[in-house]
Length: 161
Image (cartoon, rainbow, N blue to C red; front, side):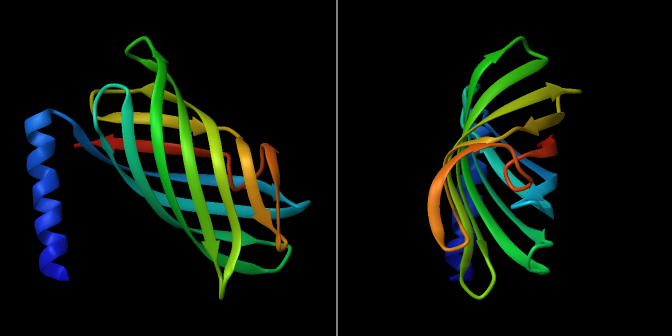
């Protein structure tokens, strides 16, 4: 298994160099309320810019929910599409699948979210992810998700290799 993972990573790195796409790392924090209780989310992530418009990413993090005094492990998969940019400011739409686990799936969301990025240098960007339009699983039921809360709003820093 480790050999396959290593070969896959090396292949991706080679493909990245050939296609001039870029790997990046980053991290975000979200602070706010979830069901009228304090919640805090921290999430490092890695991503791959396929071209100027598209990127793919994976984040693994933790969410503290004051309502149940619990900490959940989260996994986020996303695609990012750049709608507009002027080479310093970017407006993106992210397609997100996010799952938080305790002993079982506690919270999940699937949807689209706006993201704003600022290019501070060739390698460093700052981003703000605001809200979600989709569906969310919370308190053992699926419901429409439209709005802003601690688990779908965050500030990030991104470093490109």
